[in-house]
Amino acid sequence: MRNLFNTVVILLALLISSLFYFFVMGNPANFKDGERRQEPIPGNVLGTVYTGGPLVAVLIALSLISITFVFERFFSIRKARGTHPPEEFLRKFQNLLEEGKLDEAIALCDTQGGSLGNVLRAGLQRYKQLENDPSLDSERKLAEVQRAIDEAMNLETPLLEKNLVILSTVASISTLVGLLGTTIGMIRAFWALGLTGAVSAQQLSIGIAEALYNTAGGLAAAIISIVSYNFFTTKVDNFVYTLDEATLSMMEILSTRVKR
Image (tube, rainbow, N blue to C red; front, top):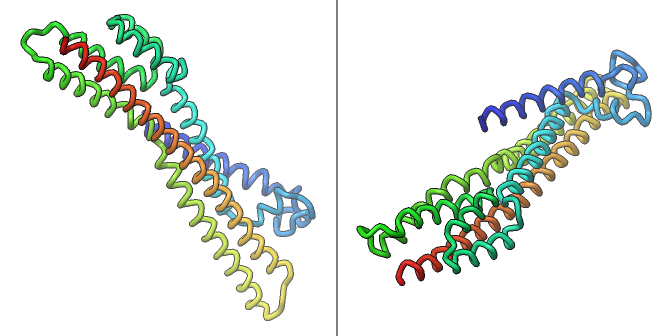
């Protein structure tokens, strides 16, 4: 399902950017020479950017992909935090544990939801199953609880980190596509100059425009992706640290309880 979502996003971005490039930016009404589409009307932004060439459509698609996954990561990480602020939830959770109210603590985890609630619930539920088992000593019980927590963490952590690689990939690809467009634009400019043996202002400007617009588009998409990747990576690291602190605190309380 995750791969299907990613594939649909990428294909839709390519489709939308292509349609926008050819039918909106490339609308003959944006150009003085109509269907030839080589002389944009002065001040017409869409027609001017259109002269950057087909790679502009690719850069628009990369920007759309980056923006889409920015929103996807924002809502996913927000959902992982649960229904209440983690600090408030952890304070209530620890108070219930210290009072020995395990069922209420599990119910609180169910209400909280998200990665934090799921991990703590998995460990506490495992402890509740083993608490009165006479065949296990205190160390074995705590080891089983820790194993349940680790298994839950292994399930939740990839959900926090998924699709970040797409943002980092878009950052790299958009820079390269922009550089390719810049190179092609400069080749076109010098090719036109060498073909005629004279300076053709129109052909020279088209080539330079293609080079500059692709450079700008590649840098814009890369900046969005790099800033977003670093932001969400920091968010995930901080959240995982909160998870580790919460599970450590729970294990300390359970360790005291089981050794009584």
